[in-house]
Length: 59
Image 1 (cartoon, helix red, strand yellow):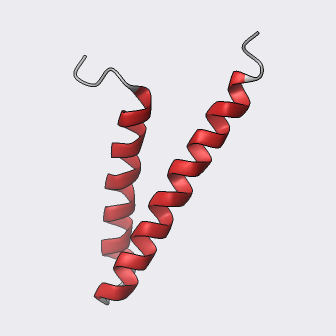
Image 2 (tube, helix red, strand yellow; image 1 turned 135 degrees about the vertical axis):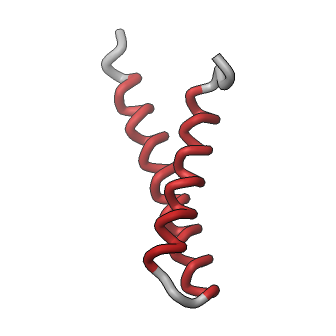
């Protein structure tokens, strides 16, 4: 397996998805940067929160 860390893989996925969506959904550079960064942060923080929530039920 190339990437051993699930967290690192998830961050790369969030980065690529936010990049593509920012490119196809916004036309100006400032809007693309803001939308892409916002989407990246939301995806990353939501995945971390969901992972923490799932960890509560592992026991």
